[in-house]
Length: 235
View 1 (spheres, one colour):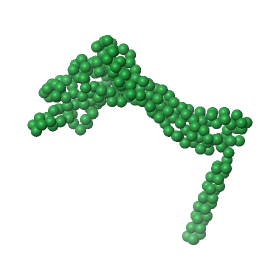
View 2: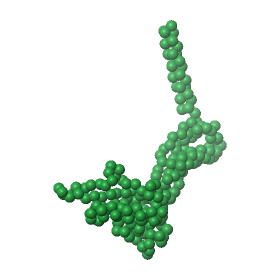
View 3: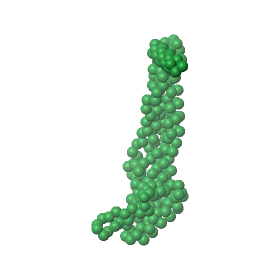
């Protein structure tokens, strides 16, 4: 009985392999057109991340550092910053970082990461913190909250462009573009221009030292790209 089952299973495997081989040969022998479809979109960043550092070497004793921390938080709240949502301590291991400089000397410091929603808000933060003596504020990265959504849209647009291109080429020779038999995403890009120097230059040219009166500033756009390689049957 077991011998018959083994023989039956073996025949099924051979039949399956044979069918797959025939199918692959049919695809290889099918006339097709191969094209590349591309799509891209420029988007404005709506996530600008700042690092904010305060340390004892700038403000003296630990009590002064604590007082400065409260000033920083108060200044951010005055700008409408949601402290719980937008601000976090970068050193999650401890409330204060400790740096040993000499045998009996320790400097306390604290570093934050702040997420702002626009270049203007980032500029307001820089000016407000500068006014209370906190100058160690740097832009670490820019991004867009809808990046993945836009990428999905670009993938769809890229394959549609590939189909349109294939149809145009087939129609030019009096033939018809049929169903796709091969689709692969070639690559997708995410170009972010380094606009931080230009942003700082524009900020330094601002005539107002008032955070509330900062002019509208913008970073350069982020360019998202998507491309696919597709093969369509020709009739």
